[in-house]
Image (cartoon, rainbow, N blue to C red):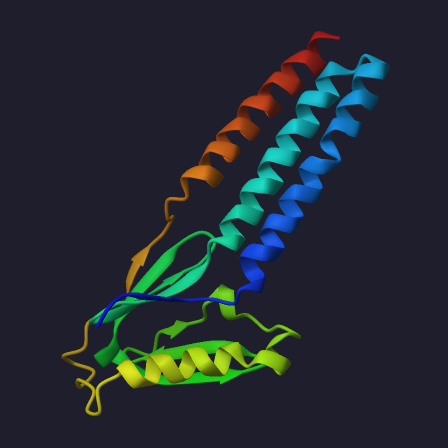
Length: 181
């Protein structure tokens, strides 16, 4: 079986719109701060814009990846991988999103399928749950033999990480300029 990514299309679209809107008003903010001669606040605002953009980028890149033997839940900060034979229950609903329980009573809740008003219409959580159930074996492994969920505490997201680094640098420059007044 080939790898397949499951997500609501609205997540990357929402993240893109939020980032575009944020940076769309940025020139007006720069103009206003330059007119007042307040360079420290301009650097601080740049830091806030970069950090907020990093947050939306991480949200927009959330996904559930179906692999041959396992699935990977990629959330904004970390990720979790579990084999299909260790999954015991997959529940979906428009209000609750998508939730999974494993043989070791661990819970997985992909952020990308969190509750949504659009899900009432398009039933994306139910479709994802059906796709996961099709890949689960008829007879799961006993809990003693099932592998635990593998976790990655912080997942890489280069574009968001670069923006976060720019936010830190901008914040430091803004504070240094603020102290120099």
